[in-house]
Length: 135
Length: 304
Image (cartoon, rainbow over all chains, first blue to last red; front, side, top):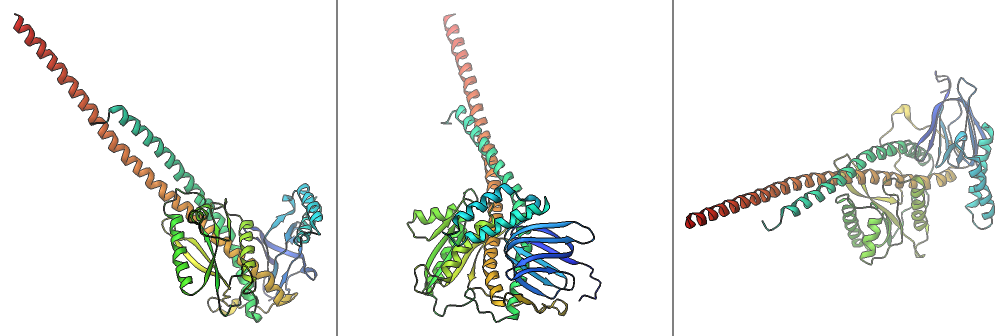
């Protein structure tokens, strides 16, 4: 498919209740369960599970970077079309760092007592990292 | 005319203020429907992409997942009933409950026992009033559901479904009763089976150009499916909640519109009766005066 006229990746960033961002991108960096993955044009069709982490999207034709925090979800790539699905997706500029830090502390405190806490810890960390990246 | 004019006036006044209230509720419902529809539309891409991903995995791997596995001998079924929190929406909640009763009868005839999960205060009140047992209920979000609520409900249902047969709280199927939003005028109470999932491998035969590509799965097809299916279930529940919310608002708007119309009619009728009473009063007064004058004139004539 790479030789067709498609110049960029088409990206859909979809949270459960809305589309967070959609557009053309040059590159996407995300973190799957097995490690970081970078997607460029012509990538093989892939379906992978994401960690709670930061996803970076390099917008096509500019230096602009879209940075979001996801709480898990799926990355699917096919025919230069990428969709990232997660229950919660927050743009870095919308994240309240102080709130994320509070969540982080709480998750740390609960780490021993509940198995959900690790997931929450990761999510809070991802939110803080995403916010720091744009500031 | 047993009732005095003053009382008629009071009744007209109270009907008028009632009309104002129902009119306001009608307008509020009308403006919220638009928001509810927008919310449903905003949630559609997620459901679409998720369905795509699930059918991609289903097509290229042997789907055998606890969430899709049919129990050989189903004994218990869970029913999720989605109603509203507040009344004044016509027959909205009661028609959902009626549909639930129909479904329960059918399931009981198949020899299954039922566990009820309730969403919305109306369903909860119905069960409490009749002293019927239910497993769990969620309230307080019926006209604007959030995904978190749907996730909570989904997690509870999945947990019950995944328990082994014979374990406490185990169910072998999960049904959902909600109201489907067809249009502003028609909303249908609908019962669907949610679990075990029926994974439809491409609803219509895909055209050659959008055949699903051969995916690589990371970490593995099973694990991807494991991650996807619960989300799929939750997104289905979210979809039902959103549809129910739009239906509730549409039903409320309709009910309030007819309440307003009825109030108008009543005011017209009462005004007419009040006018009659007023005229009767005037006529009586005049005839009393005339009678009095005549009597005086007669008395004077006798004196002269």
